Length: 217
Length: 288
Ligand code: SF4
Ligand code: SF4
Image (cartoon, rainbow over the protein chains, first blue to last red):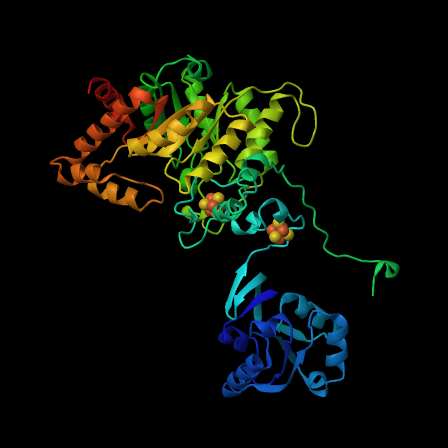
């Protein structure tokens, strides 16, 4: 899921005035899972606004804020949304840009989108994939060196790993040591030596448009 | 003698490292190079080492070439994409430089520009192969070259890395990709290096272990904090109890080189700021 963190409340406050009617949009998807755009998160921010003489006209937790159809359907009929003078979006950037399609009001980005995260447990998220557009993990024991090696080396490690840790950050596991240890379990460490991955030519599309007939329902 | 030809001999090969200056004052470096050229087979010129911005290694290697010295151009994957890397390889060639040491390079977070973009568009294996490809008259885009370069390529290995097997796999991969020599990170523990060396000597490639002079107690403490640096206790004790730790550091380095002369292919000396002592160290290392 998309991992987000909340911006400083004081930065949000600064962008509003006591004349504003603030409408807060959250998201029931990723931002609720990491508790940045959930109803609870909204209520907390609402309370903070109130204590700082701000008017919150209402809020909505969209099912998936990044779906323009959902944003449209759920917001347009909401009276408090129509009365608002400013929107605070507690969604990732994809969500903000779905909301942007249906209003000309100023939208304050309440969250910083960080990465596509793998959840270890609630509150512990790791970036294991950077959606590079050309997945190679079938050649690297299911562990992504593009993302998890500090230098993004795809043909094996640098000389800097010590006791399994990365030279860049002693707290961080060296991705290549993880790959090596995993391959060791199946006696296949030679894959590291024998697989050569050429320089990658990645041109990632910025959108995908399927023909209707190609969409399997 | 050309470094490449030297590699083909059975001589004990000696290389040393010089850092380009931060700024345009070049005479200090050239004076040191004048001293070193008399006693080493080639002088490595680092490429913005520890991710700190300096004069480029290409420029310095050319200056050394003009003085008739053999140099080894260090080239990291950190700062340039495949266009710039290949272009610099061609540039090296037209300047008459053939020795290139290819390395991934200290990460930007180790240096002065922590927030800058670390490039790593090619990794070391890809860059070694790219250099070998250029030699065949083609570049990575598949375009034909008018005139092709010729290189003597090296790479680095770390005998103190753990797990060591992984480092050995990687070294083999670099050898298969086409390198002709290896320089290692600093070693202090001869026994550890000998074990490493014995595992790979059959590869028929020259391995030059890196050595560093422990200049002071403070410098030893600094070294100890670097990942992978392993200074045996007896060496630490000698520095700590020495009346003059600097002289003791020189002596220890000379003794290390002396022991290496018995079994290793050569040595790569990183004297970090006191390169003018290298002739003295080498002289001592022959007589112990
Ligand atoms: S290679 Fe890594 S970054 Fe690219 S898609 Fe696969 S997991 Fe994601
Ligand atoms: S130590 Fe491992 S993870 Fe860190 S940069 Fe080197 S290869 Fe990558």
